[in-house]
Length: 59
View 1 (tube, rainbow, N blue to C red):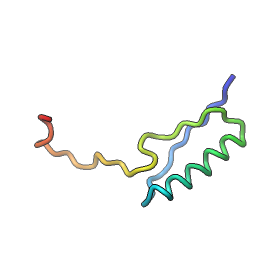
View 2 (tube, one colour):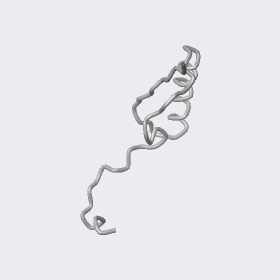
View 3 (tube, rainbow, N blue to C red):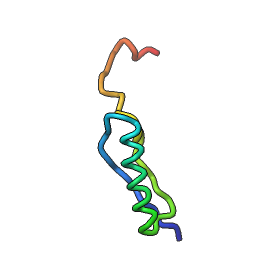
View 4 (cartoon, helix red, strand yellow):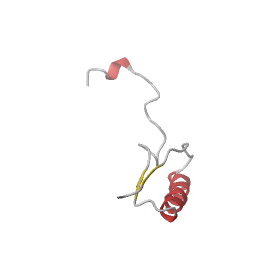
């Protein structure tokens, strides 16, 4: 039976910071027996849907 680890984290200023942080978490999960590690969506970039522009609704 596979062991699954789920990661949820804050956003970071750069992709490199995000990658380094998540790499550490992934390695920790693997060391604790996880065979599958799932990150949150957009884990390398900031969340982009912060503004709602009605002009774009008809696209």
